[in-house]
Amino acid sequence: MKNQSVSNNIDWITVIIYVVLVIFGWMTIYSADITPNSQYYFDFNQNYGKQLIFIGLNVFLITIILSIDAKFYEKFSSVLFGFSLLLLFGLFFFGKTIAGQRCWYGIGSFTLQPSEFAKATTALALAKYLSDSQINLKNINHQLIALLIIMLPIFLILPQPDPGSALIFVMLILVLNREGLPSWYLLTGFAAVVLFILSLILKLQFVILIAAIAIAIHYFKSRKVNRNIILSTIVMILATGFVFSVDYVFENVFKQHHRDRFNILLGKQVDMDGVGYNTNQSEIAIGSGGWFGKGYLEGTQTKGNFVPEQHTDYIFTTIGEEWGFLGSLVLIGLFAGLILRVIYLAERQKTKFSRVYGYGVASILFTHFFVNISMVVGIFPTIGVPLPFLSYGGSSLWGFTILLFIFVKMDANKVNEW
Figure (tube, rainbow, N blue to C red):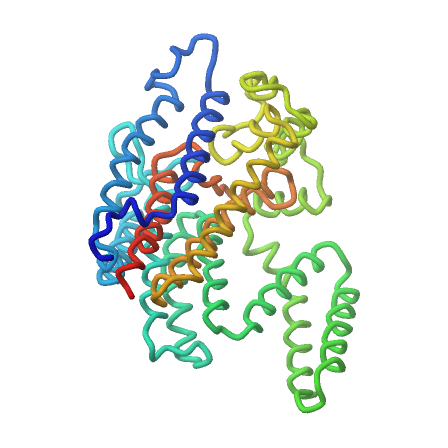
């Protein structure tokens, strides 16, 4: 079995979905970028021409990933993680500032965003740590170390500032939950988000009343042996303190454009021409596509350049306008199929390292997919998160390709782990 070639063991379902997404992504970038003066497909001064270069180099990148022994990624996971942290740290001194964010290294006319590659190395480092047989996520010390691995890149990314990328790393907590982290971590995070939003739209006394009712219901629905009136009281006090802190944090910690985006999202502010312009135009473009779309290269909103960044973070608007609801549904189905396939493959891995990394891949892809589309349709604040494999950019495409194909290699190698 060890003599079987990698191509015989590769999960071709995953690869085929990946190829379809990349091709569809280039077609959409072409549609969003082409003008009457464009020189067909190979105009390398245009974004669609540059994306062809990125895709071509991607083939070379995949070949390298699949040719390396799968055990290399486990053995050198800490080194790769440390190198990615060094690249993130270096941005403070050598980074290139674009649109107020210091997230890139300038290389000639191209830029490189290290946070895109740090996602794969962080997932590798987390998998390496959790694969140790001595690690038990019921242990508070082990929990703290695992959370620290996730938080290190976040500490370096937030000051850039790049809250979108930071959010992706936060969602790696889903991996920890799969590996035994107590569920109250996730429940606490979810409750904090709900209380934060409610505190922005309701009077504080109503929010506190809602929290008290929820805690009381949980207390009385718990088995008698698990009821703890002191713990419930402490939770209520903490929840009350959190609710009273929301207004201060919102007004003094959040920047003005962040406050504006939340206010627009929650319907407290209307700004069709300012901060809310992108979202408003994207909703118009997607809505104009109807059930079946206007046809490829026929999007009037797309051709009119009404939606900024339509080839990057807002690429889904072009899909919605040109392919309609049914086309968008097919794309969502492809992403759902890829994520579920990765989870399925992760569960059948022979080593804990490969399984944990597989869940890291699924968590990152899901978060990007969910946040990007939610942002475009106006149910999530605009935070600059690309759509995997579709949005324009070499760093984005290569980062997601590295993330996915390291796992493809691990899965192909599992026959050698018997």
